[in-house]
Every structure is written in C-alpha cells, then in structure tokens.
Length: 305
Image (cartoon, rainbow, N blue to C red; front, top):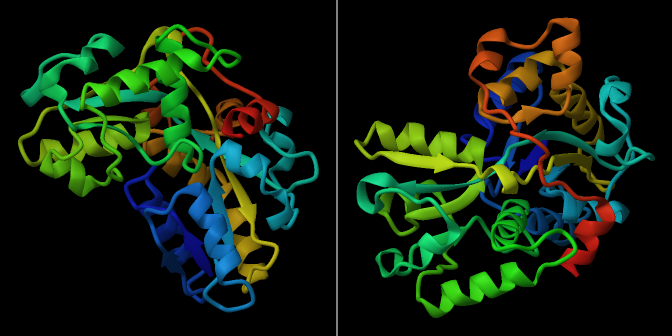
C-alpha cells in the first residue's frame, strides 16, 4: 500500500503507520513524499495513474477534498454513522479524520513574546515568518491565512484584511515562502510559523531537546478549525489494502494515536460517550475556547478560487 504526505511527526502519524504495520504485517507500506501538500497528493495520482507507484490513499485539507471528488473512490467505513454529518461527503467520497487549531509558533529565546498579528511586522522578524505551504494548495497554509484574516478584522466572507496583512508583511521583508520543515525550524530559517497545534507540539518537543524554547498560541477570536479528510484513490493500485487502511484509521486505537499527537480526532465525542478515549490524553488536550472559526465546502471552494 502506498501512502503519501504523512510526516511521522504530523499528528503522530509515525505511530499510526507502525500500528497498521503491526496489525497487517503481510502488507508492505511505502511512504511517498512525506512533505507533499494536499494538491501535490492529487498531482502524484495523476502523474502515476496506472502504475504501482500511485498513492492508494489521500489525507487532504478540506478545500482540496471538496474540489477533487472525481479522483476519489467512494467508501463508507464501519464507523461511518459515528462521523458527524457535517464532516463527511454524503456519498462517501471523503470523510474527516482529525483537526487541530490554527496557531502561531515561534522561537521565544530569539524573539521574546508575540501578542498580536502586528507584532510580526517588526524588523526583528526579517525573512522568517512562514505559513506551512501555499494557501491554494496546502490545508495548513489555507487555514493559516484564515487565522491571519480573522485577526486582521476579516471573516469568512471578507478576505481583504488578510490579503492586506500579508502584503504589509511582504513589504516589511518579513514574509518567507520557504517550505516549512523541521529542518528549517531547527536552523532558524523559519523562526515564526503559522501551523496547526499538533505540529507546533511536535516542534516544541523536538526543539526542547536542543535547548530551544519554542512557544505557540491560539487566539480566542481566531481559532480556525478544519478537519483533514481521508479518501481512496479511484485508481489505487492496491484498492483492498486502501480500504483496510481506512477501517484501521477509524478504530479507537488509531484515533487515540492522533489524539496523543495533539490533534482532535473526528470520533472524539463518540469515544467519550463509549469510554474508549484515552483519559490521560484527554486530561491534557488543548481545547477550543468559545465558537471556533469554521467554514463550509462551498466557502473553501470560493476562497480557493
């Protein structure tokens, strides 16, 4: 089975993949391009259509999922009824798996505190402020933009404040388009990153071991929440394995592994009800304060276009 765009430190995917391998030792898992964007996942399927190197499954942001159903093979996992109606395609083309909360993370040893969006216009952040990918292609970058837009005074229907902010950030010389990786964060090349809380937790853990104090925060009026989604490639070279993978991801074991990695799994509420959620993880989980910023499939399509 071929998976794509699953870094091991992204929402604890390393343990998730290992769990699948232990459950199905007869299935060889090939990991393609771990740092690919959601759009690049679809590009890989198009480029490799008809050969064994094509991805079998996708893990994509909402905007890409909603506009790419022609590439998906509908499939409803056994836990289908437990997935909220608003978090799945009615025909089974794609379905939510986990979400984080969009946040700002930074090297506190180097930059001190960050309390507002405008703080990032300070010359001390020259060439170091990054979103995780391209907003029209990567879910993390798309939602990072929405957080900035919200903090700048915009909302889902008014996107201009965010555009104005990033223009000012670029004019100040502080915006970088370098792809965010653990390496760019370790080196300081990306010293401020807009990203999901589960990624920030991973950065913080890794940098702590290197003596760096990485901080991150969410903003009460701009807690953007957007689930990533699972889908099966309609031209999957290993379609049966792809379906086993999806079934595995919607077990309590796999959902708890995502939860352990700092994400909120889509079955969290049902797991609380049936007692299968990891209580230790639940105790320390980052929670949403008030009403999160969310959007519909139509919103994501309109914004992306």
